[in-house]
Length: 226
Image 1 (cartoon, rainbow, N blue to C red):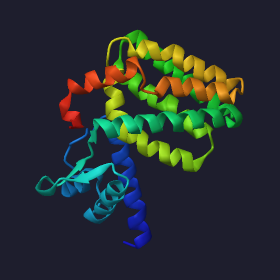
Image 2: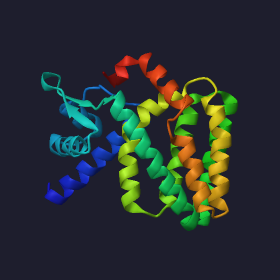
Image 3: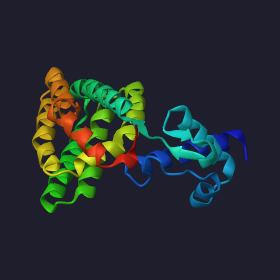
Image 4: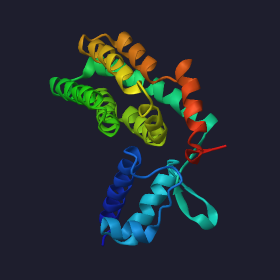
């Protein structure tokens, strides 16, 4: 196998692992066994090893000595810092999306929002979480800023297990719907500042949201380092 082919496979493996972490199929602290991953993805261990090195460099994977490689956990302080950065990056993405979004991306956003609403009506937290990811991904894509998208994706994958905790709490899903509406309306009318402010307010962990996060994390100590 050529070096280019190995690189392509390692990128594919890294992307698949990121998706599994993003959607909660792999959780913080889960062990990542090179041999098992190679068998699962139907590739040799070389691209798996390179994919894990790539994810380790971005902080998504860490070495735990004899325990091997694991999906990274975040200390509470680092998690709160990560959320504050995500809020600013998403606000920037929303502001740029208000100026750059295409008609096709507007349709994608409407569909993702509708899927969120349907999930709320069914009380389906898993479906809501997936649709919510799609909603935020459309906004990032609509920014047409590749550097921003890359940085935002890395942090989104890191924080997604913890966002999932909040999503599954009472009333969080239903509260997200009017917040999404506000963001979407501002983007569609080309209000860059309004879109930024609305999405920052939706994501940021201040006041009640901050205290709730700490409470939820204290109930699920396996997800954090102290």
